[in-house]
Amino acid sequence: MVFSQNHKWTVDCPEGEKITVDWEIINAGQALYLLAVSFYIFFFCLFVRYFFWMAYSYRFYWRKRKRLNLTRDKVISLAREKKSELPFFSILVPARNEAEVIANTIEHLASLNYPKERYEILVITDEKEALAKDAGDHQGPTTMEVVESKIKEFRKRKGVPQLKHCTVPYDFDGRYRGIRKKGHWVPSTKGRALNYGLEFVDPRTTICGFYDAESHPEKDVLLYIAWSWLQDPRERIWQGPVFQVRNFYKLGPICKIAAIYQALSHEIYLPVLMKKLPFVGGTNLFISRTLIEKIRGYDHKSLTEDLELGVRAYLETGVWAEYFPYYSTEQTPATYRAYFRQRLRWGSGHLQVCEKFRFAYQYSWEKLGPILKNLHWKGQGEWLLYQCAVFVPIFFLFLSLNGYLDTSILPIGLRQKLYYLILVYFAFTFYAYMHFSPLMEPVGLWKRLEGALQLLTLPVSSFFLPFPFTAASILKVLNRQPQTWVKTPRTRESNSLV
Image 1: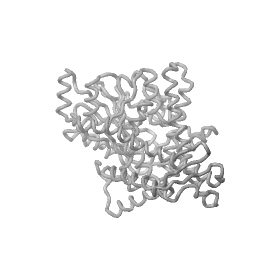
Image 2: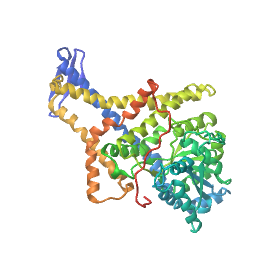
Image 3: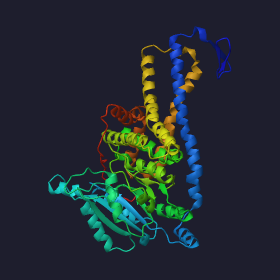
Image 4: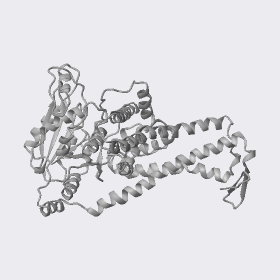
């Protein structure tokens, strides 16, 4: 395309011809069509960023991990070289109403490739679950009963780490090293449970690891964190990717698309994001014990206690969360309603963190200013952009169906090439599906075929994905945002260590 000074625009066609358009005679329909094409190309360019993120993350993290080729002997040798003991890990797992998945998670965590005498598993349950069963509001075994059964089983087994269990009292106030409020019912949150559990970690603990009740981390994850800490034994935070694809074939079409792209973003975009924000997730997370004690644990009232902790740790101690290339598989909410509620909480929690630190005058603006800027852009800014990305095509489709767009402004060959760009989106989505399919629970051929065909709903499904975050912004303006932490429902799993 070449612009001239006499209001003319020259387009080079594939056949070698040139078409010149006089801007002074362009009608409204042609102008609207050019605007639509501009938006289409703009959002495609945003999509192309995935390929740059992929090149960056593979080069600096995933390929580096392969070259490292960690083994237990290599880590033990490094500890001897540094004249240090292997770090002792306490893995904390908050679990309320998780009876269906907690046994699998315990077994998976017990099978990690690390000396069993150098880590423990601490499951944190909630007394309210037992009280609900006593009142007849809970059917089947409680999480506490499943965990206690596993503890008895572990006592008879060899080659397993210590399994511990603590139960958060219903009137625990939620603060780090907090107190019981003498019969006062306190709302349950993940941060509250973790603050209570931190009181029960082994005195030898060097690093605390945090996993959700259905998390299945890679077997060598503790080896990597140990190797990293032995190289640099400062107070540190490590955050790894979470691939919520394990229950892929039990999800609805929209949630399938969400699961694929969430996993993809954690693999290739999270390393980029963590250069700008000290992002901390609630699972596949490791924190030096002395650091979490120094910052007084979690904010028990926060809807996104993980993000809040990462920002606060940086502002108070200067420790910036580091990305590490060992994933954990988890579940995605099976229905769009459950997905909406989970993402609405995430979005509302993000806004809550923004508001909290906007008035945190005790921190220097030199540190706080860039964090707030990036929090707002990576939150409200990008949510608005992505919501526009789904509304703009609908708007122009409406104009086209009603005859308001005049496509004759561009040659037919160029228009066809623009239409073919949609194939790139589909091809990339199917690539991601094949890439993550080994991490999904195994199913039969027809179920796999059905799951793959549902990915063809990409244009429709992508319309619904930003809605929870847009709703969070709207509810915030109306002062109707969620105030309580809501647990994400799980899907039943086979006895698999995938």
